[in-house]
Amino acid sequence: MLALFVFWEGTSITSYVLIAFKYYDKGAKEGGRRAFIVTGLGGLAMLAGIVLLGWDMGTYSISELVAMPGLTQSPVFPAALALILMGAFTKSAQFPFHFWLPGAMAAPTPASAYLHSATMVKAGVYLLARLHPGMSESPLWFWSLFICGGITMVLGAVSAIRYYDMKALLANATLSQLGILVMLLAFNTEAAYVAVVVGTLAHALYKGPLFLVAGIVDHATGTRDLRRLAGLLRAMPLVGITALLAGLSMAGIPPTFGFVAKEYLLETYYHFFEHDSALIGGIALAAALVTGAFFVAYSFTLLWEAFLRRESTSKTAAQVHHAPAFGFVLPPLALTLIGTAIPFAFPLVDKTLFVPTAASIAG
Image 1 (cartoon, rainbow, N blue to C red):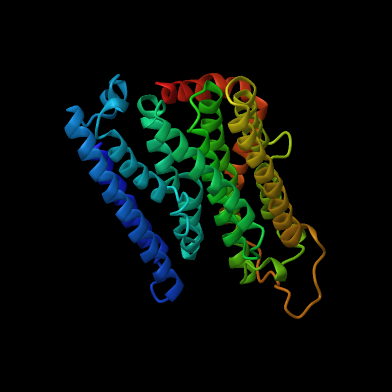
Image 2 (cartoon, helix red, strand yellow):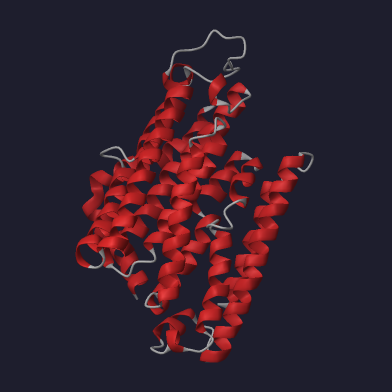
């Protein structure tokens, strides 16, 4: 766990450099500083929890810690868990530490795709998944993840619909997705483990392309404001097709990979509703359905405003100055096509990737 902490803090440093890349921009500097302070202090809290738990249990190995039967009975466990959760929640932008992530959109678009979709913000989710086998029996674990993840899930979805900036909308949508993953890890069921794995990969394969598309649109038109964009599917067909496929996956429309992830999510909560607790399962189902409705709303808002509606003749309407080079479009298109193909090869991918990975979460 000490080695994990070293590289954990390394991501805080590198993310600061990426967010504040445009050092002459006040917003970029403030966003980078805020992200560094929040995630850095969270990392120090996590270190304190690691040292406390390792000192009491006699090991710093994650695999040895989670295998110890008396872990949750340790007198230092509540304090250590609270400190470790602080580190995970700050890194994965969970309530009440969620405020730093939308400010990180000042980063260049490839960095935003890195920060907001696949890697750094998933570090907290990864840590929670690694610790899950040994700590999931604790009520403190369940309620912390259930409440903070649930609030983040709904709050991010509701916030996203208010934005016209493509990257701001996508950043708040990412908050919601991270909340979904954290809330799933509160549950100690096989369905939840698979839902976490499927949801993590699905999110990376639609959100990464959408951030890159936002950057291409900004580069080609000079703006990311949805009120000034229109008709981009006709002006940039490959970019438009990429956005449509990724956007439909974000909305969870069949037969996309996002739809598969949503089905696993709802199955987890419905199973808990039927077999464990109707109250908790019902709350989780209601939160997931509300969140899903907002996912559809802001996904179609993004696609309609920028790509599907007719070109505007307004003086404030943005124009495509030049079509993007194919090399610009290839990375998001490739990611989107991979995500589009997975549902059609799902039995194979499920057997070779999802089930073994979910089993590692179960311990």
